[in-house]
Image 1 (cartoon, rainbow, N blue to C red):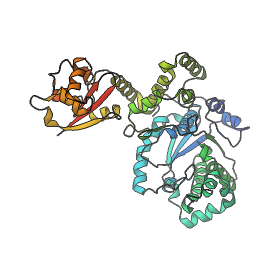
Image 2: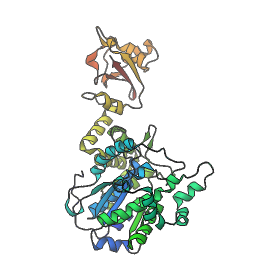
Image 3: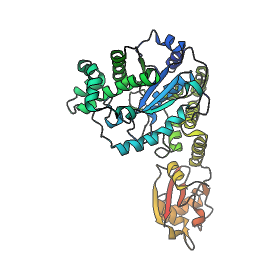
Amino acid sequence: MMSNSVNSPLSTDVIGELSWRGLIGQTTDDANLPRLLSEKQRTVYAGFDPTADSLHIGHLMALTILRRFQKAGHRPIAVVGGATGMIGDPSGKSEERNLLSLDALRANIAGMEPQLRRFLDFDCGPNSAVLVNNYDWMSKFSYLEFLRDVGKHLSVNVMLTKDSVRSRLERTDSGLSYTEFSYMLLQAYDFVHLYDEFACEFQVGGSDQWGNITAGIDLARRLRGVQLYGCTCPLLTKSDGTKMGKTESGALWLSPKRTSPYQFYQYWINLDDAEVGRCLRFFTDMAQNEIESTMAEHQSDPGRRVAQRRLAAELTRLVHGDDGLRTAERATDIFFGAEISELDDAQLAGIFADVPSKGLPRDRLAGEGLPIIDALVESGLSKSKGDARRTITQGGAYVNNRRVDGIEKRLTTADLASESTMVLRSGKKNYALLRFDA
């Protein structure tokens, strides 16, 4: 749950707030939305399909917009796509997704729900957030009922003009199955159901969702005779147009089991200068003047990475809480030389994910122990025993970031940094892990 209360008076200019932050792409009614959103509390929704057991950084755009609507006094609905996730959204995809089993979808939803609850407040009075699963209402339809009651009201001609459909049909290397073509109907009906159930009048989503959003607005007008609204946010991309949030090991996930708080923190610390200002506006609660002063301080001495450090701290705290931020900052200190203690194997694996590691029998630490010279060679930090001796005598060998005093040093279980892991270092930044398993 959000740590700060969001049961605030109705903001008079949430669209203006979103606009200066760069979070508005298209809207369905530029002229009237500021007035409509300042007149009274509105209900706003965004959907999240459970294609994995965690949200990733790309989901943060729509989730952040929901959060900002709630802070402005409106009521957010997070829709987990238990039904739409069984189909797969063709928007922005060059080929059809693999269909997931119902059990896999349920496991993914269970992983996503606590993450959604970190960003939205579900107990703050009239604008408390709502979390729903579209499988709960879509599963009640039979195929014939859905075709008769919903499908007849959407024109195939109009659907074919949507970018998400047209771009796939124009490709020569992949087509579009009827299953994926039907996705737009399901999402369109979600908007109608949410209007019926919660008086939801507004939908937000990424720019690739424009066709699905407008299809829902059109369906609501035909079925209920009401006018609904929507807006899109930009997709999270770098200045060169490529997706942001991609790492060597894959996506930047919000789950600490998939991306550790340290790895998450380091991604933002290492962000290019060209991207950091936008991300401060997108994701943090910093005011405009505070962002401007932070960027001015950063530009006066880019090497200190002031803006990146502020962004990394704000986002890591938001996603992983204060404990996660402390873990990430401590891990950063460790990687730059702080002594290592009171960590477990998983934490060390996260900190040193890109460091060479080698497994050795645990009995190598028994008796008199493993000679430090042999350990440096086994780990690959030294090419030979002579090379290892030189490193030690020159003061460049470390175990768990503590300097080795002499070549006679022998390693025992007392030198383990965690249950089974020992961290060796040569020089300032050359690390290796030795894992001693039974």
